[in-house]
Image 1: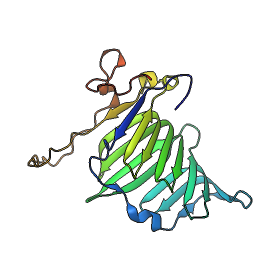
Image 2: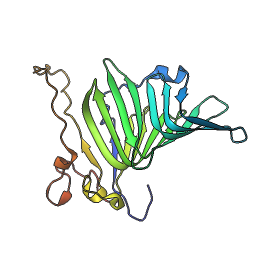
Image 3: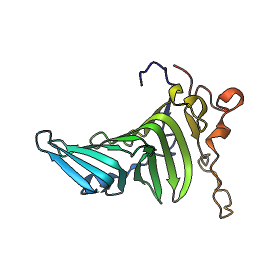
Image 4: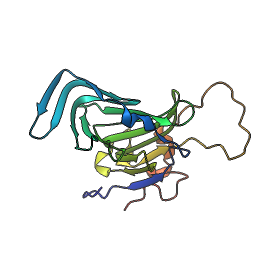
Length: 219
C-alpha cells in the first residue's frame, strides 16, 4: 500500500491455512440473504445500499456491519463494501473447505469483498484469524490485510500512523500455531486447547519481532 508512511509489509503464502484446503467451494452457488434496517436501490448504478445492523449470509459466508453497498456484474458475481459504525469494526467469516470445522474470520473498519476473485480486504485496524472449531489457531494484525481464498496468499501492511498502546509502532504482528510434522504421531491431548499468545509477546526489545526474520521489515 503506497502512502507517505512507508508501511511495513508481510506476505504470507498459506501460513494461516496450514494446508491445501480453500474456502468453501459451495458458497458461490448459494443465494445471498441480507438483513438491514433500511435499503436504497440505485437503478442507474445497479447498486443496493443497506444501512443499520446489516447482516449478509451466503452459504457459510457471514458479513456484518453498519452499512453495505453491494453490486452484481452481468456474470452474476457480487462485490460488496461493508463499513462499520464509528469506533467499531465490520466482521467477516467463512468456513474452509477442509475436514472438520475450520473457519477464517476477520475484522476491519471497512471490508471490501470481491466475489469473482474470492478476495477479501480488511482495511484499518485489520485483524484476521484461523479457527479450529471455537479455538483460535493463528492471528494476524495490521493496517491492511488482503486475503485471497483461491491462492491462499495473504498480504499484510502495517502503518506507523496507526500506532497505539495495543499495537506500538503500527507494525504487522502475527501469532502462528505450530504445525504437526508430516508422518509424526499426534501429541497426546490434555483436552484443553493452548491459550493464544497476546500479540505483545511477539516483540523483543525495542518493539522488533522476535524469531521472525524479515517479517514486518520496512520497505
